[in-house]
Picture 1: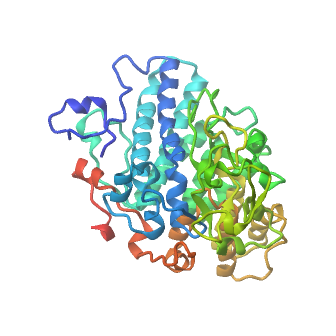
Picture 2 (picture 1 turned 180 degrees about the vertical axis):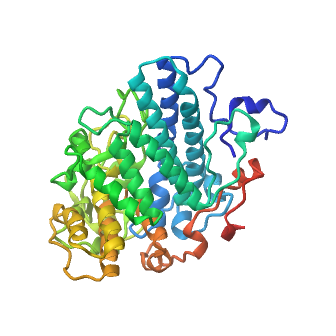
Picture 3 (picture 1 turned 30 degrees about the vertical axis):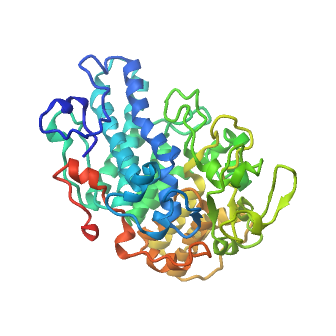
Length: 494
């Protein structure tokens, strides 16, 4: 694998084209609090690599049934399921930062760096409370990166040792059950060490509740309904965390501090003052992608390209009273104050629908709005789905789902639904709630619905979409297979 220590470059058996990710270890490092802080800052940086590109959002959203890209330098490979194990089109176009390969690279970069923190920071001479938190953050990050890897690639490498020697650098992949076993263990450690989520939590750092929310979501993907429900319920006991009254405020760039009552963990693209260093001074593409072409819609951003649209069928799926539909639009106001009609939004189609979750009319340098990763609406819908799997559509399951629906201005779910109909309704609720947040594709793959849902998500720009069973997981990048002879390709992609 490519996540190796700098010292391995001295070994004759190393590949000449290996990319080095962990170069922070020396004999004199990890001695002080400053060393420990620098090490955990490095472990956060791959999150910025994931979300600035932002592969963590686009890989899911361009594969799913909600949004699609304007073709630009091979950006349509995910939508048309035309990628290969070399990710040839993305490589040729210089767009690996939008591809599944970036997810693999970033995850194992982050895992390697987290491993060094977990191994070395316990011996640092520093404040005991902060040491405990840093180690807890590293366990959270290692779990997050392993989860991100397995939901994209299925059987992946479980790596819990730093690459200080060659034997630790090259590891075979594990069964999915073993990946989740490690994720659970790391999150148990994170929950025990991280602080409770309050208003004073440093921007960019995970809290105990962030670890519990990730635990609940990972367990949902693992079809471990009891664990998923219990962890989600544990998050709900925190009185600081809640659903914001107005769903649009979650995405208002001027209200991000207020929105932390719902955003449990996010990509903090504007957090220049964050002592965690997790996303300091890093921007992302979503503002530019979502806004109209030619920077023609000032409310969307100062520099926008018209490259990311919602399917008309997805827009039509909303109840007209659903406040979340106002985060999509079929018109916009141009620079002259004129209303641009839907047929003129983009030259590629007369049915373009603009996504408004990442509007940023004020930033002059990059994009300063956050990208949600874990938020309370997710916790409620996780609890609803897990409860329904365990006990059927109980009153509690309805209450969890209805909390999200009611916030959106909708009435309660239809009473008396069967178990499967209720679960399907919750999945639909997730689609409306989390569009353009990098979530939907994984809901479709973890429930094996992608083969039937995706062919229906078409437009005049993409009239035919034909996923294959092998597309449930992405192929492990050939570069990684070449670098690590113990690693084998996913069976459907061999």
